[in-house]
Amino acid sequence: MQVFKSYLTDWKFYFKLIFSLFFIATLLYNWLNPLINGITVSDAEKEIAPNWEWFIQDKGDYTLNFFSYFTIQTNIFVALWFLLSAIFHSQEGKKTSKWFGPYMALGVTTFITITGLIYNTMLLPTQINITGFSFWFTSVVEHMIVPIVMIVYFLAFMNKEKGSVLETKKFLKEKLVIFYVYPIVWLVTMLIRGEFRYNAGKAFAYQYFFINIHTKSYGLAGWAWLIIALVLIGLIVLGFTTLYNWIIYKQQGKNKK
Image (cartoon, rainbow, N blue to C red):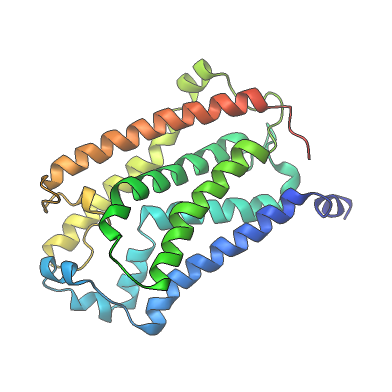
């Protein structure tokens, strides 16, 4: 009880709780809205997916596809981290905490950074002509607000217990490789899944144009876009994990409520 009372006097508890609930509500709205009002497929997708009608008739397939997006998964990571970190607020930034220590938060922050950068540099220009409040509300929240809130909280406000963060050389040697695991597993899974869906003529075989190895986009072959995406994501992981780690290394032990 005493621990819970201490939560109520710390603004960070309210910050994490409020934003987690907002992010969860947005994700639920984005998922459930088409299920209630009708699943749609764009004209462009209809041209390349002969069996696109299966998608609008199969709510299970729509749901699995929705939760396969890197954007949705990384948003879920952020929402859950904020929610659970609020519930276990006293564990935030502790050296001994596996789930709420600096490196779990660094992973979540890095992945949502990938979401924000890739969307705003490679995907947003292709969607600028789309209209509709629902699309733009969920897009702005999931690709802009969520990354900004997570990055700002992690770098500026999150507690980092002294001794919980490694200096750069040790980080690169002991921790860096860990942050490549999720993006690689996601990409390999989506390429395998995409090949099955493409051969079956299903809609949304690949979540993003830059991993669609079968379709030429903006003058470049699909395999070329895949290589560009791999290099870009690899550099983002290397650059931002190193930068974020350097920043929090300087901060550890200095945080105040």
